[in-house]
Length: 424
Image 1 (cartoon, rainbow, N blue to C red):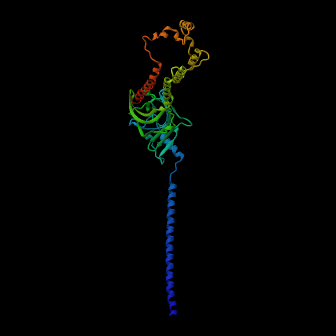
Image 2: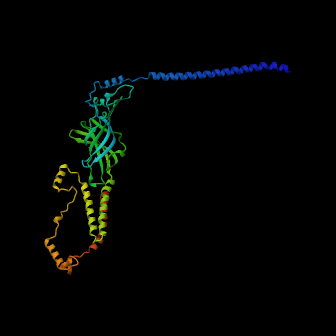
């Protein structure tokens, strides 16, 4: 049996091996075909992308120049858009860089803003792959610009360094954006009847100078007003509380004009006046109250306190005065004696003198009698007849009463003062 098994099994094994080899070869062929297809697809995708990139239109400098020339050809910048058809709508928004300082003497404040206006001009529509033309200030004078002015401005300055701080954008649908940076000294009439706890609303008003509301309509853009960080503002005595905007119509002889107004709410800081005014005044009153606790016989101590109080009051009153002109100073200097300066106090001691008769009588009394004190030399003083018909009040009693009355009166005054300022 052994010799016959080998010849019978060998052909069967060889046939099955050949089938396995063919199957593996077929699978390898299919796999390589799929890889080639994927590579071809990727190549096709790259080719498509490359074709799109190659076919993308390029915009050259000459094309922009041609667009601008075509827009300005026949354009009349003296006429507003849609004249005779409908009013031109101007959307405005303001970015506040800083506010301050506030000048309460001249009733004005300084503000630095970026003022933006947006409107549609159908004459500036163009067909191009560019959506917007970003232009500088050289183009501003060639198109129509709204004649907006600030109504309560005393002085306005546009920034021109290093170039005019103006921006112009023109979209392909005719929308125009025009911004510029301004520093304005605007009127702000401060109501000082609640000083130094006063609050104010300083306005900034603007409108068209020559176009009434049937020609130009102003509208607030959203957001209408934005502000920078207030901690860098030079408000000094004031604190920025908030802002609000409004729209009004002013009726004049030349027509009805739309007035846009921004109110900046300010409140005065109390810290400065607390340190410079309230605390020194309170300490002065307390210092004068201390004199009632000093013995009545300690005349030098009481006199020193009185002079100190007078000097303090003189310091406050002199500091509140404004600076005088040079001519007035020279005039005061010429009228004063040599060695004196403004603010010094001269007491004419020579004008204070006792009558000669009483002075002679006193000395005669002292010379003729042996008295323990000067007043005992007089007959009325020794007998006490001078007290007849007069109210006798002891100085010690006055001091004891004043120790209670003085702080009580000061506390009542403060109660009325603060209630009246804060609530009335």
